[in-house]
Image (cartoon, rainbow, N blue to C red):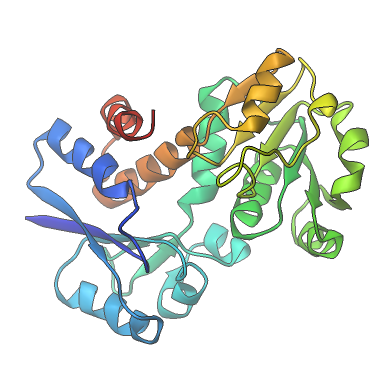
Amino acid sequence: MQVYGLLGNPVGHSLSPRIHQAAYREFGMDACYATFEPEPADLEAAIEGARALGIRGLNVTIPFKRDAISFVELDELADRIGAVNTIDFDGDRPTGHNTDAIGARRALEHHDVTLDGARAVLVGAGGAGRAIAFALSDAGATVNIANRTESRARDLATEVPNATGHGLSDLADLLTNAEVLVNATSVGMDEDDSPVPAETLHRDLTVMDIVYHPLRTRLLRDAAERDATTIDGGWMLLYQAVAAFERWTGQEAPVDAMNDALRAEIE
């Protein structure tokens, strides 16, 4: 049996097992997806132990995405982002990758969003914001990063090509001519609130929220009321899993089956 899994602490809430198991069932694979909760001090031992046990691949989630970079060989994208969410054991040394960035880009492309030459506004400069900023920039977009702490946005913008950093007070001006808006914060997860004033949204905007619980956040409801295109957080979650599956197996992922399993849990 092929074994894959998730490293995090805690991981009981994760939807990754359901998504990946759906792919294994679709292909009739003799495989399973397990969850592991090592203590932070045991992260290196957990990665080495997984390799010794013949585990084929691991996803990595909070709080280990940055710490894991010390124990794997990074690909170029993960190195620039400074975080790992996927580990591949097919080689002399575990390799670390970041499929969050790939997931964000593929989620937008799935909805026919053209990023090359687009004017994008990204709200949030944390871990998810870093990955998405590089994804947007690498796809050819100009990226205006807005964050509650403006200095964090400006610091991130110095690392990302074609990016500028701003405070949230600049959102109205930034969104006037923007074509893409991505919320990379957790605002809207635990409260019916939005990080973006509703009056700044418009019909020429595609709005993606990475929050997937709830699926229809206040931001997305406000955007829909203004005839903007909306993309819920389930799509980025799906496509980061798709990218991990394809890296581990070398097969094109059964996207529809994985999406059906995800939507059964969050809709």
